Length: 201
Image (cartoon, rainbow, N blue to C red; front, side, top):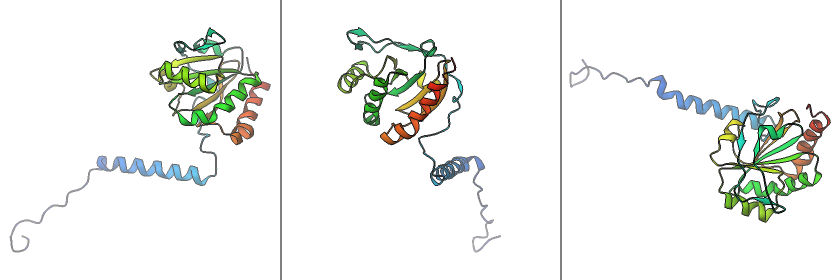
């Protein structure tokens, strides 16, 4: 009996564990994120399960109407990565950081030692043509990844992302986010030099 009402004491309702699960997961992710920041490491260098693994099988058609020196620019498949070192860049016209890093890709294309591959990610062909027509086209091949399926296979988090692939088709390095002058000179170029020195055909 309880109080003046004479009724039974109300039972305390327990919160089921499953209801707390999202909060627990969020807390764990927050702790991991904080540890990454406090470690002082470059957060663009997120480990990838594909590093030192063969590039996935994929085949992307060319971007409709995209030409270079008056000739249609070809699409790209895994077979096109074999026999030469490639830099694979995932970009889109709607991606502001892609515009920021673009001059560095142009510089890399002028260097000429690596094949330049573009994945046009979830973009309209007319916008891709305008983007490259305005900023310049550093790519030897550009594949249209209209539905983002190739990006999923490559473990793309977002755009831009840049991969270094050796002559045997193995992914050797990955950058998430835009290249900057500093990261290009201090990190990306030395990694590319390593692969060029040991292309592993």
